Length: 114
Image 1: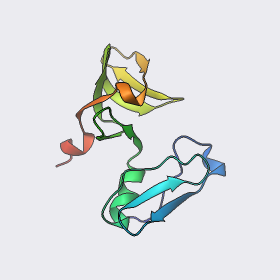
Image 2: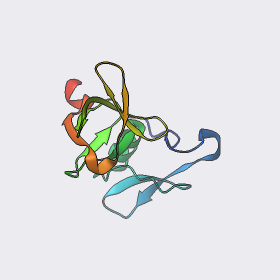
Image 3: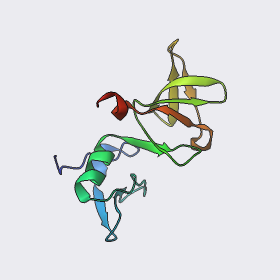
């Protein structure tokens, strides 16, 4: 598992570095510029892997949502991404800008990797 951290997906990549929180448990990666934080994990390696998978936000039930996961909001359903805000791309290709408290995770892309 790579320990190289990807830049924060919410900030200008050239200007941002990320830091790994060592609180001693759990571990989480946090952007030093905007304070976006990845999900808390039991190990440093798991925290880095989760950050690099592109954590988007927690959903309204507290589940971690990543880019590529399927989720729904009030009037849309599809894949989640971060493009100038949190968006859900529906099957017809439309982008729906949503707030984290509106999102409900349907299926994690990681579930499909098993």
